[in-house]
Structures are given as C-alpha cells and as structure tokens.
Length: 278
Ligand code: AMP
Image (cartoon, rainbow, N blue to C red):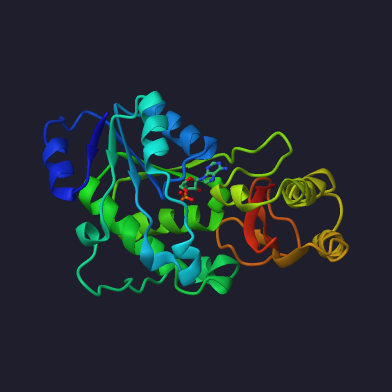
C-alpha cells in the first residue's frame, strides 16, 4: 500500500498507470469503520486501482467543536486499509489542499441543498463540494464511491460531477448497520451502551415506514414524531419525506425507489442521521 501526503507525490505516482486502468476513489474523514471498508471493497471489485483519502475537511464543519472533537485514528485506519489491500492512501495536510485563508467555494445545487442537512448545517455542502471538486481534479478517478448513509451528499456529488462536465461515475453504496439496525458511524462510539440501544429507534422508525407504505405520508410522519416525543433522551431535528431526485418534501408517494425518508436526531448530544429509500 502506497501512502502519499501531498498531491504532487500522488499525481506523480498516478502517471505510471495507463488510461485503460480504472481508478476508484473513496473519500473519507478517517475513523474508519465497516461502512467505510465496505466502500473500499466495492471500489476494489469494480476498479483496478483504489485510492482512499483520509482528510478531515475543515470547510465543511459549521460547528468548530464538532471539528475539534473529530476522532483521529490514523494508525488504526492505515492498518485496516492495508488489510483490505487498498492500493493507495492519500492523507494530505490542509496546506496541501487549501491556500492560506481559502474559504469554501459557493455552489448552486438548486433544490438539493434547501432542506435537511442544507438547512441545519449551513455552509456544510459548499465545504463538502469544495473539497470533492479539488479531489476530483487531482485524481480524476474513473469512479468515485459514496455511502447512501449521507444521501443528500450523494445526490449533491452526482450534481457536482455533472456541473464539472466530468465523466467520473458516482457510485452509491448501501448503508452498513450494526446488528441492532443502527447505522455504523464514528459518532456511535461517543454514545453510552444504553444510548446506543435507544438509538436503534431511528432505524426502527424508518423500517416502520417501509412496512406501512399503504399509510399516508402525513400519518407516518406524525407517528414518527410521536415516537421521538415519547423518548425523552432523543431530540428529533428533522424527519423529512422527500423525492429522491429533487430532495423536495412530498406528501404523496412517488414511484417505487424514488422516495426517501431522512432523519436527523440528537441523543446524548450526538447527532445521528439515517435514511431509507422506498
Ligand atoms: P465520512 O468519513 O463520514 O466522511 O464518510 C466517508 C464515506 O463513508 C461517505 O461516503 C459516507 O457516506 C460513507 N459512510 C459512512 N457511514 C457509512 C455506513 N454506515 N455505511 C456505508 N457507508 C458509510
């Protein structure tokens, strides 16, 4: 496994590959868990060379303490990637990617950024798109892999690739969950054992919707809001039923697999997000 700390070294190494070789790119912020690793595995299956980046991107954090508390487990991360035989790891410094004082670029993703994370994490998607655009320009992968766990991010990255008029294929990878149904996340490690158990409410609600699609959306929405109201440890931030393509709210189901239900909620001060596509 090759580890590069600068874009210069990485790009020099990439010159040794031919145009026919498919390059897969998996961007991460480290603190790797099975969710990340399943994405690396998919890239390995679909591509000849897999590059995983580990970079905690400062411009996508709208909350300074969230950035300060972001876990750094680089040594363990590299061991996990080595075990999967990941070909290249790119671990840049901020200075390798941003000029001094450089801020996030302003993007226009239309309706995709209006609600949900766009509403509750102002500036987050401009920061995310800024770094993803930089990565795409540095690496120019054949395919880039993103988790469906961050569904809004996935849809925005697809829009970004179009805006860049790039041929990079954006591949969404299903969410990996604990046996309890809780979506794997580096933030889960901040939860007490009892909160981890209670946190399964998020996926239980999503599954309830999946199993009761004959009910009207407003009825399901009310049911979920009540579940969270009845649990004093949880604070529901949003529960949104949206159209997958526009991410705009819906009150009636669209065609199969064109609907998404997205939840963000706090427990023990930890913000969890999850979604389901129906
Ligand atoms: P992050 O390190 O949080 O920026 O995540 C890196 C990538 O892993 C993103 O594309 C996420 O959507 C994805 N990811 C995070 N958690 C999971 C999960 N539980 N299952 C699958 N993919 C995930």
